[in-house]
Length: 406
Ligand code: PLP
Image 1 (cartoon, rainbow, N blue to C red):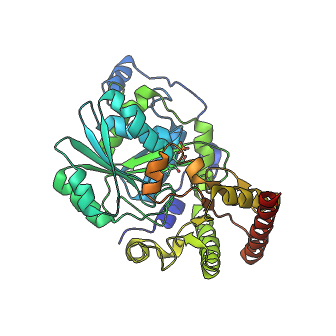
Image 2 (image 1 turned 135 degrees about the vertical axis):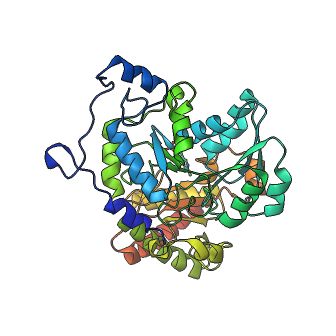
């Protein structure tokens, strides 16, 4: 049996100079070579053990890469200046003009916009599908399809992927199975479940302090080396390099990810249950009413819970906005995009992170304007938070009625 990912990241030891308990930060953009021959060898691709230039890799970034690869059970990993940098680089490394992608229709809006609006300019097309429907996915595949792209738990509809089914489909059709695991680090290990490439926005839960933008790709050494190849690797040639200082701070935060995920999950489970009991339209993978609840239970790391993201559909944008403003006013969280912070963050996805998706398409996938995505924080006393949330909802509704009448 493979090691629990939480144990894997905490078992890794990287010492710094003078026996420091954290690795030293490499503060150089370029590196000396002992001989001219070893420099030219490096440009020929023999980079093993050599540092060339920090856009290619740096010792500090490689520590973080190693920890992330360990966490996802992959051979290797590489890090980027943003999650979208990791996504766009992966896609551009794999696809060329004439190729086709099948992607889930419920994915992060930026990824959707890249696939829909940017890639066609380079001759790469995408068909967006309901990722929970095998027949529709298979129908969308053509001779030109190179990749199946989705998120383990989708943004913002929280649909959970059937890894076994999709991985078999990808094997049968010889496609790369690429999964963004940003919403569910530690609870889901897509590579172990059959994905080829796992992507993270480190900006979210993994870093967890909302001070950094960063991304990662975890995959085979062959794919990671292809991304970093000095002559043809888009990680190297598009230059979305993560700074060593940021990599060092993300690595330190990664070590507390297991206890943070447990607390995010515990709080989200409590709130979603309580809201559901009162009749709110709640979506959370931990609820028995969630469509893929049993599926997720069959493969997730149970001790990490069901994750920190839940949605509540308040019926209209006007109501959602009033409620979010009132909750922020009462210090229950922030009206902000992103996720994985110690404080609860909320936004109306349809008019924010998913606004790239047209209104018609949002309607089709039942992403209503009143849907609020909550990234539940690490609140110490979630029962009191819940009571205060209900009071804020009531105040917002009362204020709205007054406003509507006046
Ligand atoms: N993937 C998901 C699921 C996201 O929610 C985001 C959000 O921004 C991204 C990728 C992009 O990551 P970043 O903002 O770090 O570029």
